[in-house]
Image 1 (tube, rainbow, N blue to C red):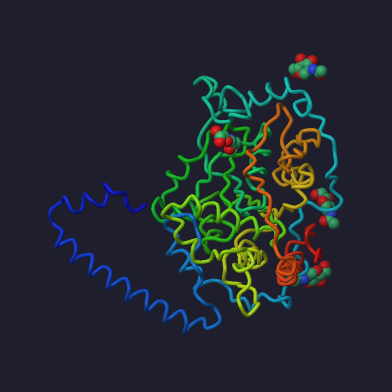
Image 2 (cartoon, rainbow, N blue to C red):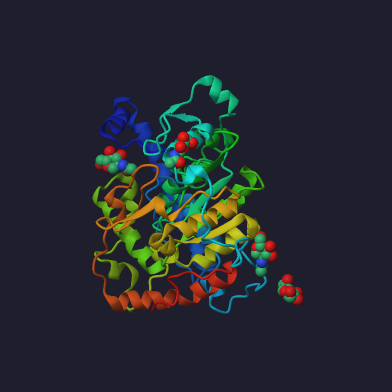
Length: 419
Ligand SMILES: *[C@@H]1O[C@H](CO)[C@@H](O)[C@H](O)[C@H]1NC(C)=O
Ligand SMILES: *[C@@H]1O[C@H](CO)[C@@H](O)[C@H](O)[C@H]1NC(C)=O
Ligand SMILES: *[C@@H]1O[C@H](CO)[C@@H](O)[C@H](O)[C@H]1NC(C)=O
Ligand SMILES: *[C@@H]1O[C@H](CO)[C@@H](O)[C@H](O)[C@H]1NC(C)=O
């Protein structure tokens, strides 16, 4: 629950006329909390001398305890150096080099807008079928029943990564007639699991999908938080659930993340008090400390050590269930990454490069089929000038982790080796 800190919310305690009792209660709660925190910190320092407590960093409101849990359970950084023992036989790639990523779909709906709308109408639970305003009215009840429209738990989860193009990926995938993506981030496994531990609440957040559609949810924080998200997913969702993670250059990602937090902080709300802890005046100061070392415990740096998190997912999901996309490639040319998703999900090939165009002003791809649609420009904020030495230092820092990522996912990523 978000504490009610509005003027009204606070004054109602005083109006209640039991100020003294309330004060005493609060005093004891405060003393208890402070003592507990002290002991937890003490234990933490003792058990993990090389792991300083991380700052709490989310815009969410109730992730404090999960962060804490993560500090306790995170693998130590030392275990993740370049020497990591990665099973070289592992292949994430159900999608291998023999699979053509450049095939032309023969589906009529893929190049004829009229046919597209008909096809979409055939599968969708919503009407009018307008991909720009995707979630309007549901179809008339008879049709609704015939199609088996239901709110289903996701069969596919886009689990990350923040600032790597998950929003664009979601919008583009939503064009596929056989995909039904929920248009808001549900945050079930990070913020709502403890409160709404029953799956009914989760299901209720999903959009309707028909029998011929795959229900998908996207919450980009699952990839790294909470620590046990992969395990909770195996408990909650079908054991065939598939996970898509889009990764991108961790250096560029850190800059975007920084900008996003600055923006959120500027529009300050209660939840963002936490961002103050790790947002320095500049990006450089946020990632490099005054001894000129990388601040690995700053979340914007830490989450870029992708391999650390990928291992968690691999512990709970088979390789057929995990797809890692290249966000930098996706940004340059979305179609091949979308084709990977189609193959991964066993969907009829639909996407064509003609469906997308590069908006020069915005600097990212927009959809032109079946009609032009584009995200708001704020999504493609331009980056400030960052000290190139800092970028290089970060890039070198990530290098061994990136190499380990390649080994464990059996996939090359286009950003690697650029410093
Ligand atoms: C990896 O593959 C090789 C050859 O196919 C095989 O001999 C070896 O046992 C495999 N290793 C593991 C860990 O499965
Ligand atoms: C690549 O994928 C195809 C189709 O799934 C499969 O037949 C082939 O054996 C795979 N090749 C390798 C090297 O894994
Ligand atoms: C597009 O599809 C519609 C409906 O299937 C069809 O009537 C029309 O002839 C098609 N147009 C072209 C140019 O193929
Ligand atoms: C874009 O911005 C406008 C106005 O700020 C808003 O009404 C609209 O919902 C936004 N569209 C998207 C796709 O976020």
